[in-house]
Image 1 (cartoon, rainbow, N blue to C red):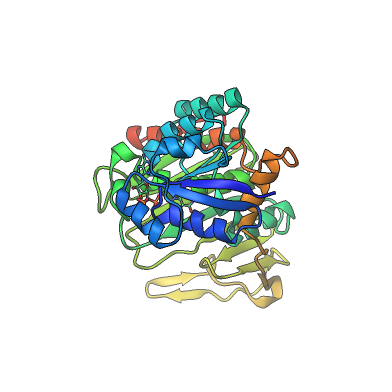
Image 2: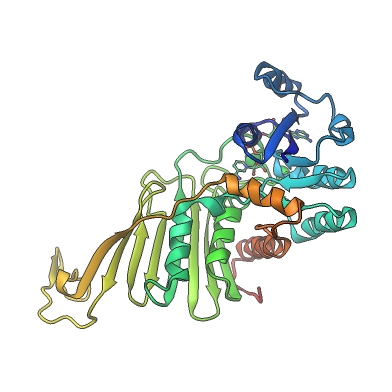
Length: 348
Ligand SMILES: NC(=O)c1ccc[n+]([C@@H]2O[C@H](COP(=O)([O-])OP(=O)(O)OC[C@H]3O[C@@H](n4cnc5c(N)ncnc54)[C@H](O)[C@@H]3O)[C@@H](O)[C@H]2O)c1
């Protein structure tokens, strides 16, 4: 049985959900609703049914699933209305702008006995899955630090993402994905957070940020989003007891250098313009082993597949409420840290 979906908000990401649904083995696209009539015209031109109002969507008994892909500030109102109308709801990220609003939606889902989740699609990104696999298999022993970066050079895209009132800024936009990924790799308790915002092209919201997260068990993560980077740094860089892993860019596999023998005799110093250094001299091949770790395969259709099986009571939903709340709590602490210019102790 396929579940009947209406996509609310037929913009950039709404278009993605529509195309995705048209290819899906678990979803039947019933139509779209957007407050902008021009977007409804585009839907009709694309052969997609355009609902005439939100009420028409909510009253359509055949629609049992709604995906919300509007600007961030309106997710809450639409999600609660849809849940109260008896629909299952997927919201785009970030679902809400704070924990309290998120809890209000979760209560509405419980009250109506409907399934509610957030589209954390980047859990299916293979660069992230490779790093998670490195940890899960203990391939390089204890991991001290994971650096996760995304860099662009075009500033904040679009219009509403540049404005506070719509939940703009890169912490909400990309931070929510990268923090979720780190918490999937490192389930240990988060004990402190330090976040610094960039305001290079925009003073109203952050157009990038630098975030240090310290966990129990001597692990930390450094997450960086930049929109003013004309040379990109590696997507992932992992420092571990038995070596280093690095994924240079989205399309690359992981370069791994494993240490075979810690001590090395006869190190030849590197000459720099102003002196010599043995400390920073590269290792010889005798004491290390280099290889490429191939990224695991993934299928992003598994997000909707899992969600539909969860509606049918056959599986647990993969992106669950506890995880959603934990990520949103970290986001709140990031704002506090950036505002006060302080490291904040946490118990998350
Ligand atoms: N998961 C991902 O990979 C990913 C990627 C991009 C965007 N997103 C998320 O998707 C959401 C939409 O982003 P976008 O880039 O598509 O924005 P967008 O501006 O391209 O599209 C938003 C659409 O929502 C419509 N809209 C606004 N208010 C509405 C309302 N009250 N009812 C119905 N329609 C309404 C607008 O008219 C517009 O067509 C955001 O929450 C964003 O964070 C997620």
